[in-house]
Image 1 (tube, helix red, strand yellow):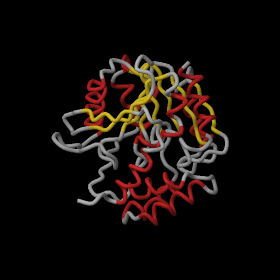
Image 2 (tube, rainbow, N blue to C red):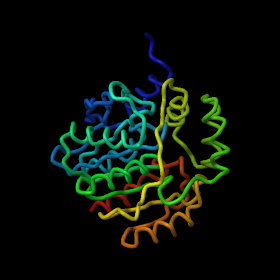
Image 3 (cartoon, one colour):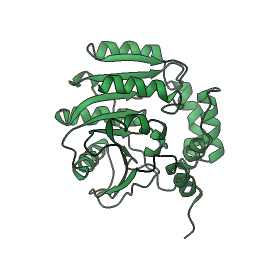
Length: 275
């Protein structure tokens, strides 16, 4: 069978990662999970969870800096586009996602790890840290959605056409609206847009987690011009919820320009926090 347009751009984007990056297919009850692994074998582990439709490859601009110090594990999410398979135990709920991530960490041999998530990946990271607090050393949340506040209604209305009738053109139009002129990597735009059209995608969501229950060190980085939510409002809620956490804005960034927009600034923030 000839590779799909998504597969072709996925492989093209994979080539943007450092040459020593390893591809791991981790067996779980829900199917094999693709993990892109980079960094020193004796480095502290750092698990990266992407936003929806982005795949683990979206961290390509962050991997070189983070992987200089940490053993980076960038995961293709279960139920989303990418090279993670959905076979075996059905994916039905957020609890299934937590069980899947437990199995992924077990398969990677990670008894504990730092964890960083963007958008939907941040929502999943929070739920996992609440589920297994002793397994997550430090937690970084990059413009988290459905954690401290819901989506703006206008954002959902703009996203609706691409959700109801997915197409590359609709996804690109949505990206152009949300990023509002922030320069975007063209290959990533194609990857994101084609990911929305992959047959069988099933993004599982759930209720907003009780983030006040987080006990370890937490960093919340918010996109200054995010259209997914009001960054100032989310920052205020995050500070009230996590009085001992770190909360900061990423100047000039929008929700979907991350984590690619100004990667040096994001990398510096993450490295300072992970310390």
